[in-house]
Image (cartoon, rainbow, N blue to C red; front, side):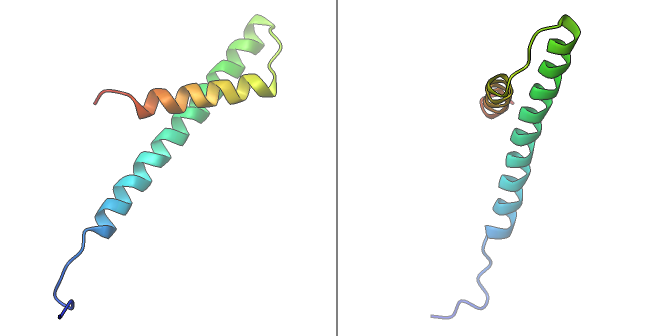
Length: 67
């Protein structure tokens, strides 16, 4: 069996997954930054738990966003 002429889609699919994961992480970071600014503006205490919750919320909203 010769596999020299067979083209695989691994490089394309890996690139798309990488972009999607980067977008999910960026969305989580953006949500944390916005929440941190809002807490600071309103004088609320911002904890590490808040950061985790807001990151997960932002990442999940990006994952399940309708295109």
